[in-house]
Length: 637
Image 1 (spheres, helix red, strand yellow):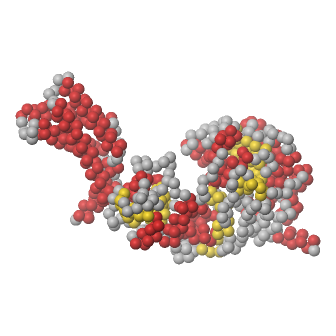
Image 2 (tube, rainbow, N blue to C red):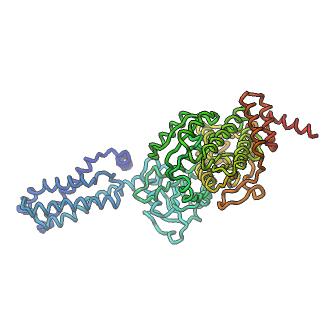
Image 3 (cartoon, rainbow, N blue to C red):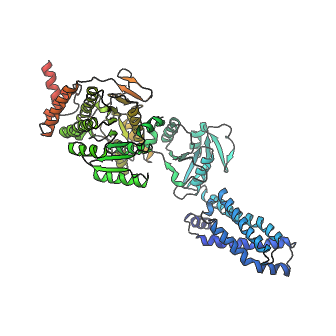
């Protein structure tokens, strides 16, 4: 019976079915009681006709004054179970104002009310109104934190944020966790109780998880380092414990934290790196008040570049993309999420010279970020002409227009696959780099600074491995990997975009900047961790299959930032690549011939042969174009 009553009360509060008018009726009842008690105390606990007459005379005005004041002060805006200091202060202010009206009522001789009764009632009314709300809050906290909650949790961080997280875990139906304790690195907090729960040292984490059968750990430390967070996540993965984290937005306090701010940590958190220090003052000088063109603006990198650029208040953004629907969706995001309207969405192809001329003539961009490209290795291996027309011709046309119209900076987004390329996509980007670099050298006295940036795989970008794995896990598997030993470097989209912008302002012209991509990640390990983070067991719940390397795919990516092939800059994560520079006129002639063959849909072998002429380090791997390399080798021998 007791359990059924508890369940009914818990469900009633959790489902929020008590309307505000019911709370108002409860307040009226409490105010009546407080007024009666005040008269009893004033007249020495005796029932006398004189105060009964006064009570009957003033009770209507008394209740009306309080209810009107409560409504004006919005004391019913919050939920009783979340009553806090601000709510208590609001109630006290409302009662104070209502009693001021009572004093005015008495001083104008409208009715006979004792000032001493008002004084006594002020304290009693405040005490009862606040006490009953706190009682409801405590009752709810008790019922929702019963030991039989669906999960047992620890909160990492014995702080204000940790307390807020603990209360939400106890009270929210979707999270529904019993918090067994707090974990903290501070020895002075260990052994104490916080919000009725003991505090343990972080060194006890593993034994606490096993002893208390913990299945959830919530990270609620605002200044927890990325390295420490990832170490904790790795430990929890080994122990089969789910990790969650508090999103720290503008400094979260007890009264500000919401259930939506507590989220499950994912693979992106496990691969995250420390935040990049960007020279915002220099970026502001370069970008503030400028007209900026971004190609591939609806793509993963292009759209993030736009979001980063918005921080520096450009005068206008020209967003160019060939994909209609993604560009439309992104335009809605800019208006609704960022309240930014000074942009023009342009549907167009970077291969279309007339379209580019029209954009430059009409909008006169001062800075160009070129992120439009074909990037999928297997597709470009099967369509080399298209790779040339978009990645090479598109870049050439855009660079030429930028030079012709005196653009201040032209920043090209390239790839690590351009280093010793083994596939058409990487080679096409290397050819684009060659053109941009040689054009800059040939016109070195022009106003335009041509800058190229290279980086590796981007976490969560369209068509990348992580979204693919997430889809495969959601559908029950299997996860498909090309080779058990394949490794890749990863970087988050915001980090990549910030480094592109930082390189853009440090570039003097003609450089190819490469980024520190961190440690290589074995894709098999990545898949196993993603499966565990999703609550499954690798090879048991979700199978992992190996499909073989795809055409043009490398087993290991080239290291971009080794000391032998790079020069340092003032930023420890940005280096300048040492590359051979080609004569502009020679490069342009070979590239023009290559574009002509590609445009005429010449044979794939001829297109790729011409690419290898310009990029001799382009050695095909696991591809039909290995035949070209074999013939070249045979000629030498």
